[in-house]
Image (cartoon, rainbow, N blue to C red):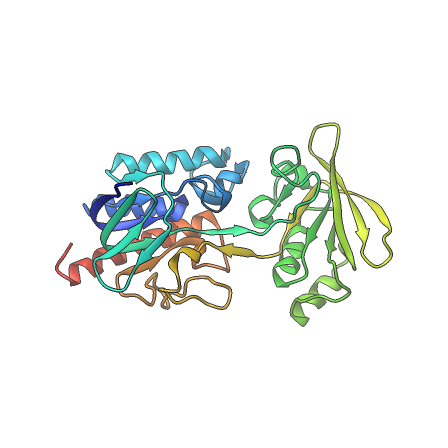
Length: 325
């Protein structure tokens, strides 16, 4: 098969709020960006994690909220309006050994003077009956982001549970106590991985109860077709108990989409891209990273958009310094 070659000043790998904000800024700076938005990359549609979010209520400009899929469509339309060339193809490998850089999909080779990586990170989820999108309660009470979804009316003054045992799980459980009547932490072991201070904070909270040695076997619905509760199994005794819930949140970590880089960019111990302080610059001059692929702390659409802006501005300055802008 013949591979089409494209030449550009900047190639943006990935989409979502980081990628599209970078594209808008780069296009307005007349850098003529090419975006490889992916095709079901990491099992998620172009647009990233937001496409799996039912309603977005914390992105400025939408006082009534907006569907996750719709805001992603608006991001894309704005990128196209300013001249970004978008291809629904997934990057399979890169060559960052020298400039210009080479980025490959199954159908194209993009040659670029600079690259912005905005491939995001996917929340880890556990497979059990009732946990999926098609026949289960994903986005109908089950989520992987308490900060994004925890304030929804359906969770207020209702019992909620968090699955996990690390600092993220403790933090999300504590956050959810603002809204839920009771917050359970479901953990498969008899001790937590979280730091001592985070453990104490959770254990001392009157609204939080930890279910030790426990796993979720099944989620079931209520009369409205939303999550009604879960069946919890004690892994030591085998006993299964019913736990009525309005919300269930996975807090078991994320997988940044960095495998395609082949070790050519510095990653941390969790495989997130390492960027310089107060910058989106990576270990490779001319390669920048924005959004959740380099942010393990905030992981919000609005912070991803902000870092996409940073990356585009830094690309512009980089190319100017090289005499190529």
